[in-house]
Length: 167
Image (cartoon, rainbow, N blue to C red; front, top):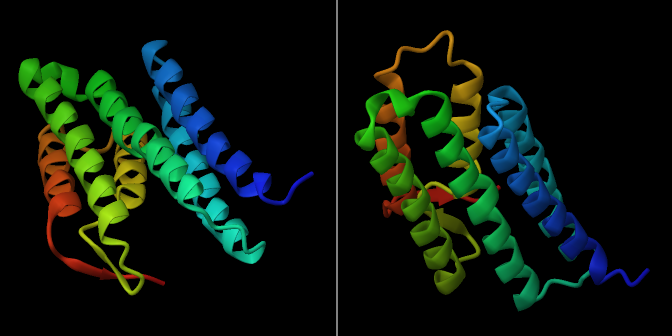
């Protein structure tokens, strides 16, 4: 197998897990949906490392990664949080879920344009999305009002200008 394909296959597995999460959410399997998002996080952590290790980093891979991240860490957690908890808030809950996904898209677009190597500008969507999934796993322990506050806060942090060091 061409080693150039390996990181992209791992990136696509991230995307597949994001779509699986969406399907689980639609079926009302919220725990499984959250776990799929967390597994997507693992795949996302591997793809860049593999690309650098094999010295096959590319603009194509970077764009594919961002598209996958938007599904797995933007849209999937937003829909999961809305369907499992924030649907009780009606259109307000839906609006907050949409805002989360939109802020994630803005965050990814800015990341791709800035191309900064030393730090992130704003909290990465790859942190915010899995954190929302963890919150859903804790739904029976957290009050309803926690979710809109967390959604607004994480949405803001993604589009903020805060410098977050890269490790």
